[in-house]
Image (cartoon, one colour):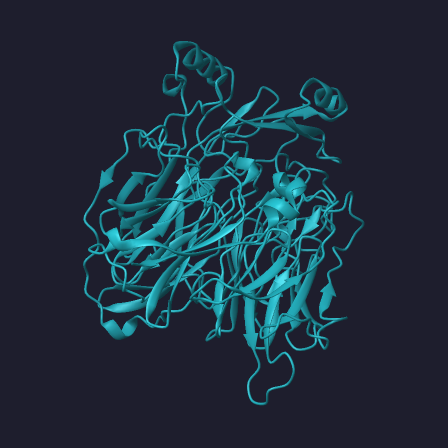
Length: 640
């Protein structure tokens, strides 16, 4: 099996890259990388331009640092996803391992400065693997008390920890012994059901975190609350639950089941974004519990599957835009909202660009949440399981086509052999497959793109000079089958090696599997991974290319991790299963350079200038869910 997570037909689209001139002073970026996404708004862009298309032949490793996880935690690596992106804090490069160790390195040599271990329980069973995508930095103004410069990290066991950025010790004035233990609000079914996997964000003197919660276990599940704490002492400032718990909540009419709703989740497991000037935190929310049956929560379920702008000081909802009504497909918003400034009609427009699992890109006005690029409601399939409630329409961007296809027919079946193709064709024929938003069924439904996306947590990168959003996506299919609740236990015995979940409290459990041939090859046609550029001024799909090689053939590989863009017009991305770090031309999508990593680089890279030299850094550790090569190396590249 080449993919265990939960193509563009034809492909290789070439457009004309945006060339609208914009004043240089409208681009206010540095050549460091002080935030997880490069900036609080997740631009993943750097004005560093030392590395260019003309000198990429001189780009080679500058240093390599090994965390030691492959030896010290060898027994746990099969449950660890290496997805971390470092940040540059003062004179240190700081990142976290999947096991919540925070490590600070010399940016020029990779030598270790300090190391902090959160000492999580490795015996837990994390619902989303052991993951730590990044950390946040916060610095007090004025006087210089202890821990004036601090690192914040969320942990796999639900803690928020404050660490002194200068030496790696705990900040004793924050919470209890430098940490706050977050109460999920109800007893957990198992240790690891509730985690924090993405980095916190700071807005003013407040630190904000989301959470990752195990899917499909039950209807009455932990709430997906976003929580904000005083960055100095750890006291709770506000808490926002995406699901309305009183009829006074304006979103309550869209939840027409039991009052208050018993459902949980709609959490924000993906990274958050911040606009300091507007005092806004932008939250990408997920589906309510459980994922694949919503008959107990009729209505659109507002604030779930939405981009939500919260006031940083109070947690009050400023606006909300829903990308999926009444989600029963696990189509969470999986990536950090991108806070970009788009040059159009001779002026800048502040927008929020949200990439999605469905392959769509929504572009919204940052002040109001209204579509900046047009969105229309389109009719979708209306035949669901017994007792299900369905939204008759779903929102679709009108200007931008889907980045990956949303419909799979028997004629599309792929296989390396005739037997493979015939097997895939039969599986597709036996499934409900009426395109995007075909409801889950007892017969079995194709969810395409699969629940891993489309886009995932790697998100996109923005080139402000060209108005181009660069995003990578997957093109695989899931087969999802509803199982009557009284037959779930028997199904687990019949399918011991597949995901069978109870969705306790609902009339159906579920079985989910990636649609693969007997040889373990996707039944959907290649490319199975693409890299694309969208002009955010008009929604045009400028170019789209397969991402990743199989046996030397560029068919496009499934991918996890995101791109970055530099001012010299280069896109850097790892993400694929073939272990390469690549560089592309941002205007055309042409691949210009690649380097074989010691393991899969399924993390988002970063770049910075240190002592006059530009570095590109990526964490190469792989992901067991994608069956990629595992490792524990942080690698830095520079010109030689």
